[in-house]
Length: 145
Image 1 (cartoon, rainbow, N blue to C red):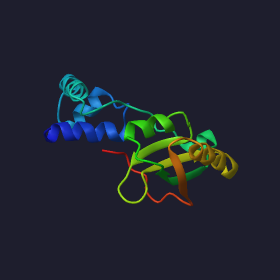
Image 2: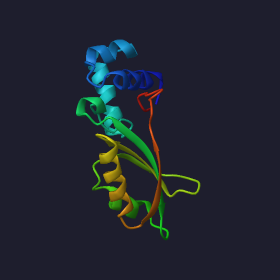
Image 3: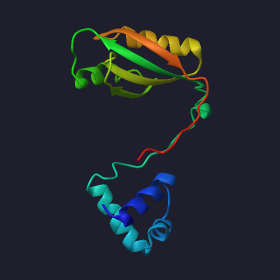
Image 4: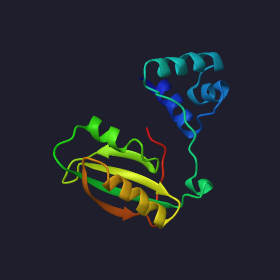
């Protein structure tokens, strides 16, 4: 990974639909050279995909929460992922250090919908209990590197 690769990555982070010409301009390359470099970044796994970032407000899902998940026993991350995978309100899930076994980020239409989603999480083996924090306002939201 060199400075040109980093410039290409920064360009597609800002706009995943950037043209090869735009990517080349950002990285100091021709469009064809930018395409070759971008293809190499994709084939090497440095770029794992391109995605659309949908504003949750557009879906009318206005309620966000971070939920700490505490499990019974010692489930593997793969077991926990399988257990949580069928709950569509879960946008992200990570194993974490500390007392909790995992942290999940949920989106819901409103508080009743959020409560139903949390109840489904709690009803899932091996989840023993949860602790939730509802997002009041979003201060920063940056593209991930």
